[in-house]
Length: 328
Image 1 (cartoon, rainbow, N blue to C red):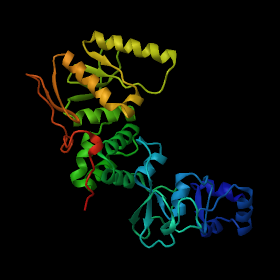
Image 2 (cartoon, rainbow, N blue to C red; image 1 turned 180 degrees about the vertical axis):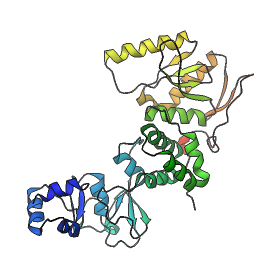
Image 3 (cartoon, rainbow, N blue to C red; image 1 turned 180 degrees about the horizontal axis):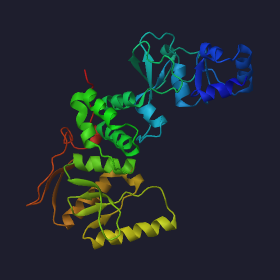
C-alpha cells in the first residue's frame, strides 16, 4: 500500500493507529520513510508535509497551528513575520523544538514559539495541522494589534470564509472586542487597502470604502472626507495595468475628487509619508487637518456630519501602538 498517498488523502497527517485501521502496515510506513515520501514530526505521527512547513513544525512542537500562524497558512492577510502560534492540549507531554524533535522545547534556544493551551481532546482526530478557522480568528482578535485583527476580519469577510452564523457566534465570544468586527468591511480588496483604511480612521479621518461611481468607475478603494480618492496599487507593473490605472485617475478627477495612488510597499514601509501626502491633499480641498505627533488628531469641516470611529480606534494615535486586551 502507498502509505504516503493514504496520508495525503486524509489531510496530510495521520497517526500510526489510524494508518493501521486504514490498512497500512509498519512495513509500508518504513518504506515511505526511506523513500522520503513521508516524514515523522513526532513519535507515532506521519506526514506528507515538508519539514519546513509551519503545520509540520507545529505538530513537532506538540499541537496545531492557531491564531495568526493558522491564518497565514490559509493564505490570509498577515503583516510581517510572526512567531509560530501552536494550540497544545493541556495534557500534552514531551513538547519539542519546532526544528528538531530530539530537543525538548524547554531546552530550545530562540525557538520563537507561542504555546496556547487548549482542552485535552482538542486535537483528537486532527489531520490538517490547523485549528478551526473561527477559533484561530478569535485568538487573532485577542492577541494581535488592532490593524492586524481588522485586516484578518476583512479577509474573512471578503473571501466568505465564515458565514453569517459563524460571524455572529464570533461576535458573541469576543464581547468587548466585538468592535473589531464592526471596524471590518466585506468588500476590501487587499491587505494594504485594509491597513490604510484602519489607520486613517484611527487618525480621525472619515473614510468610505469601495465607493461606486458612474463615469466608467467600478469603484474607488477609499474616499476620504468625500474629497480625496485613494487607490492602493498592488505589485503589478505591467503596461496594461499602468494604462488602466491612469484611466481610473482621469475618471476620478472627472467626478470631482483628488486622486492619490500610493503603492502597497509605501503603505507597508512609509506610512507617515503617505499620511502626510493625504493630509496635504485634504487641505488642498479646503478640509482643515491638524497634525499632532503621531498622526491626525483632528479633522474639521463645517456643515459636514462626521461618523464616529469604533470605540478604541482613537487611542494613542497610530495603530502600531494598539494592543488589544486579552479577554479574561
